[in-house]
Image (cartoon, rainbow, N blue to C red; front, side, top):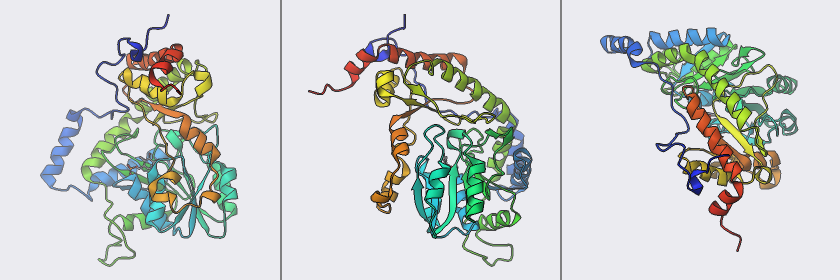
Length: 397
Ligand SMILES: *Cc1c(COP(=O)(O)O)cnc(C)c1O
């Protein structure tokens, strides 16, 4: 017999609460000597550690060029600039806002398109339909760490002579055809902020096989100064500090363990929560590996017995944090909704998926007991669905 959910009076499964994510940090003792070295030399930025981190990242990602920057958002801003994006760029709306802002910072109009109902990644068919004479590029996302339809997008970009940029913020640790992401399109930009699988405190990783793009991003992250105190174009200060590079290198050493652990957690979630009616997950292509930067479930209100909003409240009563990623989708944000012609916007899949998904906690050092209790929380909410709904949903009278 399933135990009674906390919302109906059962003991909360997490009396002390369970947060969405916790960064998996290297032991401080391992870092301390190098940090002391920074203070001895006084070389805090633009030093050898960032260069070494870039070398190791290029090795790991199997790409020719890596430029470490201060954040993924800024890396995307500089990548759009390096690609000379103008006019319009095609982009999904079901993503984090920082996928789209770099277009706005470059004066490029985002043209939002729909996602695939199974992978939740941008739908190449919709991308191709949205191309106009003003389109200069495509921005795709490896959403939640599941590789996008990279070959189909490359084929479309080639055929229409468009630039292709991947927001790979969630992509570190993911594999496509057994190899890391980073080599697709013209350039891919990863995030190393603490909520991501690889963390450098804060940071962005620009990966490309194009030497000129890499050169331009390098100049751009240093005020646009190519080294002669002139400015080739308007740049920013977007350097990655030495301390961040040190933390990032330790995080890279832990990556494979961390991603493997996330595969185990995701497999348990899929086996137990996926056994309940009315639950579905993002489809990951055969042979691909998701980084499981996040774990989202799609809840069918009728089959599961309650909608994702009521489930979130039931989980909150258990002490479990959850989020509705990505609701509202970006085209509905204040920053964009005025610029978007509502008649031109038909994003039924985005709207449906954004309204039905709930993201539950996952992090790389989550132990089996924690995973078990999260599953139990969802199971017992479902088992008592009628009572939970009666308690949490206002009656229609
Ligand atoms: C986190 C994130 C970013 C921004 O990364 P920062 O390193 O925080 O700038 C961009 N896109 C997506 C999809 C993200 O989740």
